[in-house]
Image: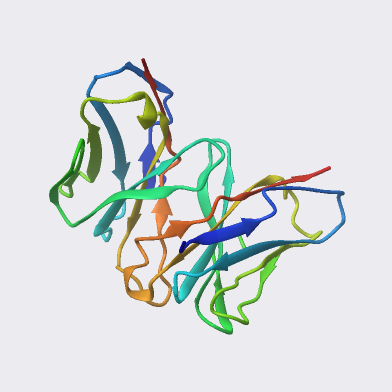
Length: 114
Length: 113
């Protein structure tokens, strides 16, 4: 079983739809959960991060972590064509320091159609 | 503007040649990273450095080498020993204490034929 599993999609939705992106993981030591957005042929950019369990909201984006189920989600409300990108989940056991490692999912390709 | 620059954007090499990819940052970050991204594979860590003159192997370091002589620079050399070097290479940096918040460069697409 891979440490982080993410459905690669592709996912295609109409403009204005609510989008749900998900990852599951197997390593119970993960405490930091991140979502990165990557436009085509560009580097990823950090969208949101969450420490431990709970929800975090930033504008149209909401990140949820359920550590009991080892499941994280990113919700996008009122999706826009500019949200079309690959979304990568990432996780780590610590915030930093020696031997630090960030484990990425494979990414989900999202297309929002006007 | 603060950020990370990678050059060149596209690089073409013949098999058997070593090639060095550039990565520079002016964010005053101590930590720097190199990742490789292949279709359907996600990001895989090649090397990382927490401080000048020190670096550690990541998950797929074989066939690669790095140096960290300056805080701002972390070049990656893809050697002829790397069996499948064609890929999209991404450099990132972060503060040491918040390594989950990594800032990425625009990437270099390397094609070896």
